[in-house]
Amino acid sequence: MFRPLNPKHVFLCFLISFAFFIDPSSLQRLDDAKKKQMREKVREMFYHAYDNYMTYAFPHDELKPLTKSFTDSLSELGNLKLEHLPTDYSGSAVTLVESLSSLAILGNKTEFEKGIHWLSENLTFDIDARVNLFECNIRLLGGLISAHLLAIDPTNRLIQGSYNNQLLRLSEDLGKRFLPAFETPTGLPYAWINLKNGVMENETTETSTSGCGSLILEMGALSRLTGDPRFESAALRALRQLWRMRSSLDLLGTTLDVVTGKWLEYSSSIGAGVDSFYEYLLKAYILFGKEDYWRMFRSAYLASQKYFRHGPWYHEANMWSGKPTYWQLTSLQAFWPGLQVLVGDIAAANSSHREFFHVWERFGVLPERYLLDHQMIHPTEKYYPLRPELAESTFYLYQATKDPWYLDVGETMVKSLNLYTKVAGGFASVRDVTTMQLEDHQHSFFLAETCKYLYLLFDDSFVAKRNYIFTTEGHPIQVMSSWHEKLPESYFSGNWTFSKSGAWESRASALSMQVCPSIAPNSRRPEQHRESACHVPDEKMDHRCWSNKECGVDATTCRQRSCSGVGFCGLWNPL
Ligand code: DMJ
Image (cartoon, rainbow, N blue to C red; front, side, top):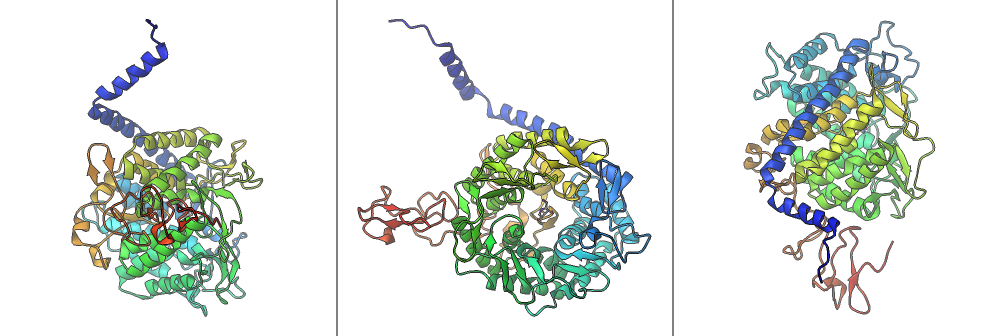
């Protein structure tokens, strides 16, 4: 019997045949056009933020975009009333320092060079200011070192006049002012240091894991550049001490005492207070090639997958028992998929990234803290201070997969940032994502990271030239053979962010380029498909077994599977 065609099916057939006949190169052209257009939008965003900073806030630290004024956040963090500072104190130009590497990536040689000259002539660290060591390290030291390396790289031709290592001298001066913070019985640094006078009397001994575990990239680079080993060894000693304090589950707490070396907060996560500790272990391995960093990272990463991960989400867990503590998504966690790309754990990265992006879509931006168990925003942490982490992961995942969906994600983010946070005087943080009420603060990381990662998503020509690692504040540091203990020479001649196989696919992981050794707990059954970095497939395809030895490691939870009484491998003993 003749049945009229269902219009829905006709449309579907049309779509399918369209998909078959579509020319991949025309899709590529579409992507390229979109990338160009979006790149220009991001450029505009950067300059809107930068020009307003230069007009209304420079040389102070950060811009207050609603009142078109400034804040000296670096010193205010440790001394709200800005006591003891000279009356004419005008900040440390933090936003300018943070913008230098972005200016280089955007190709603005004039402003890059102008910035360097101003800083060489005016910036001083000889100030009676109590600053946070971690923040000062990632923003100022990292910003200066990265800009120095960009300035001396002849391929960039960023400097027209003369450059006499002024930024390196500033970095060295700053690095020396950090050293007294490490003079503790444990080698773990104080969280706060007075730039002029060293550690203050009655200084708090409390710090965070990321506070003492995220110094090695900047301080290591400083030692390599100056030949003074003190910076790298202080940071490394602190990192090793931190690692010695781990629990038998390979978990670390969030806060600790630098004098006693005891943990103060046992709940742990991949988010606030710990995040960049993981990041620096892996990136230190990529930058310096010391086997030690890989060993620490591998164990810490596997433990995080095992005890924090729940499907695509990451909750907190007690470092001693591994039992879940808080079921919360925090905006800072959104950097994790980007880190997983470097490990080669693309599937896990992709699934978490999608969840973060759903939350972004739901609220328009990412709330600082979302309670997974109550499916609601945290009652007080409703803000979005223009954080970069989701843009960062989107950039890495696009590099790894070349899936154009990530470009759409970037486009959505650019639209939301312009819609909700752009004001005449710059970009303002969101105080409450449920009302989109704004706050008078444009954080320097908006220029150092948020705009940079969005720009690199749409135009990656900068990373195509050289192999870089990006510090936790988004400052690029070139991976160089002279600093590296392991990498084959071939690594330095190519780049690892692109590795094209076919028109659509490319992988960006440090793992796929043999930078990192395989992370799987053992090399059993290498020929079988692995779904995540810790995954070890069961011996038999049908998962039948006689003993535990035939069972692998679960791809999602990273837990050992065991053989059940009826002869199947599975996760029979949940935590
Ligand atoms: C940045 O200062 C760094 O990325 C840091 O590691 C934590 N996050 C902020 C921005 O959100």
